[in-house]
Image (cartoon, rainbow over all chains, first blue to last red; front, side):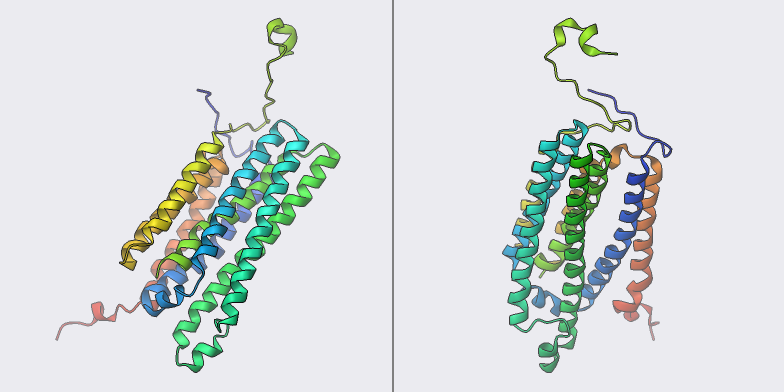
Length: 200
Length: 116
C-alpha cells in the first residue's frame, strides 16, 4: 500500500487553506443553528408533531441526490489530477444537475408546506394558539433556506471553476477547492435531514 | 525522469501524474456505498418509536457519515494539523454555545431549587 506523506501547513495551497477557513466559519454558522434547534426541540415536545408535516420522501430523495453529487465531485477532482478536461466537464455537469434536482425538490416541498399554512411568520398557527409550534417553521425555513443558498453558491462556483479550467488549461487545483465547498454543503445536509425530517 | 525511456517495456502503462501536494485518492466508490448504507440505516432507525433513542441513533450515524466525507472525500486525513485545529476550534465554539445556552432554554430549575 502506498505511503502518503501528510502535508505541513507550509505546503498546503493557499486556495485550499482559504476554503478550509471558510468551511470552519460555515460550520459555526450552521452548527449554531443546529445547536439552537436541538435545544428547542428538547424543550418543546410539540415540535415533533410539526416535524410530521414535513415530506420525508422528498427529504430522503434529496439526501440521496446530495450524497451522489459528492461522489461526482471527487470523481471530478480525480479527473483534474489527470488533467482530463472531458471527464472534469462530465462530473461537474452531473453535480450541477444534482444541485438543480435538489433545489427543484426543495421548491416542491416549500410550495406544499406554504399551501398548508406552515409559513415563516406562522400566522395560521399563532391564530390557533400554536405560537411555539410556529417557531419550528422559523427554524425550518431559516436552516433549509440558508442551506439552499449554499447549494446555489456551490453550483455556481463549480460551474465557473470548470469553465475557467477547461478554457485556460491551468489552475486545475481549483476544482478541488470548489469541490471542498460542495462537500461542506453535503455535510450540513447530512445533519439537517435527520434532525428536521426524521425525529418526530 | 522519462518513464518510457527508462522502462522500454512500459510504453502502454498509464502514468499517473502526481499533484505537488499529492494526498492520495482512496476508493471513492467504496466510501460512497458506505455512505448510502449508513443513510439507509438512518431511515430505518427513524421508524423506532422512542424519539430520544431515534435522536441518539440518527445523530450518531450522521456524525459517522460527516466524518467519512471529511476524512476521505475532503481528504482531511492528509491535511496539515493546522486545518484540524481550525475545525476543532469551530466545534469547541459550538460545544460552548450548547453548554452555555442549555440552562436558559431547557428548564433546569427543578435541579437547582434547594430541598425544603
